[in-house]
Amino acid sequence: MADAVTSQTLQDGNQIAVFKFTNISDGSGEDAVTKVDVSALQKNVRGEACTRATIEKMWWQCNGMKVKVLFDATTDDFCIELGENQSGHHDYTSFGGLVNPASSGVTGDIKFTTVGHSSADTYTVIMQVRKSY
Image 1 (cartoon, rainbow, N blue to C red):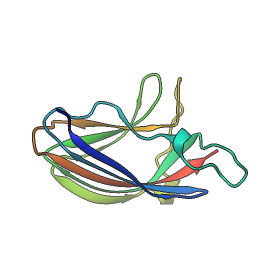
Image 2 (image 1 turned 90 degrees about the vertical axis):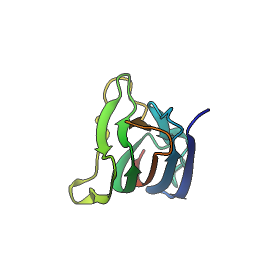
Image 3 (image 1 turned 135 degrees about the horizontal axis):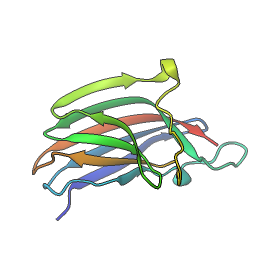
Image 4 (image 1 turned 120 degrees about the vertical axis):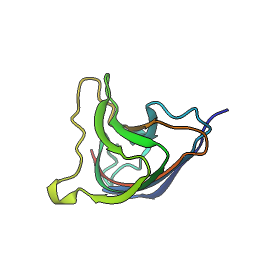
């Protein structure tokens, strides 16, 4: 069996995209699972494809497990960890957002890894990103 996960695009505009991610764990967890695939996002008005996403805001709740947010690269770059049995709203816009460091092998994608997961643990994450072309 596998965790019951959903990924929903709430908005995909010229500059901003908003997503909702959920997980109800069966104990198997997620390991560097792509949540934001920038190549699948809507192109801008000039027809250019999105190459990276900067995390501007997150609303989240984790019950029984943590979620590591990663930027995809040859060796994934750690972005932030959302704490076990915690919830919050983070707004990073005052300093330009959580920017992908573009390490070697960068794809621009954003991934999640769950930590300390067991059966019936859950997370919900809503993430707003600013698209780069």
